[in-house]
Image (cartoon, rainbow, N blue to C red; front, side, top):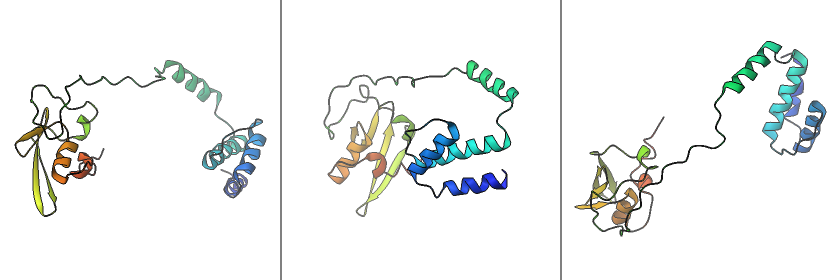
Length: 171
């Protein structure tokens, strides 16, 4: 970037949103209704650099057009399959291991079946075993970790947060 363009881009940071909208109209030849200052600064800076140092080459434009035509773009994400309907159970009721399955969306954040989750709460250590179709605690099978957390604390709370599973996930 040439020194002149660098100074102009630095000056954009000090402008108000209204002033940036006017500068956008000047740079692009059309007005905008965007009120996001960061976006306006980036777009105007790009345009100033393109005008000062040259835009994309014709070859690069053609390549981008070919890539865009070849792309299999989705307008909407695929629909998630709905979990099968299950009979209603109370949070503390024992559940039949054969009839209950974990919700589809929760599977990615939960430990593998067979894992024992431990949590110290008010000086006591609580252990929960993960099954393919629920969570075993105190000799009972619960449908969700939140139901186990409610049985332990006496109040509703997120099971993922209660057992600190949200902090262990990193990708």
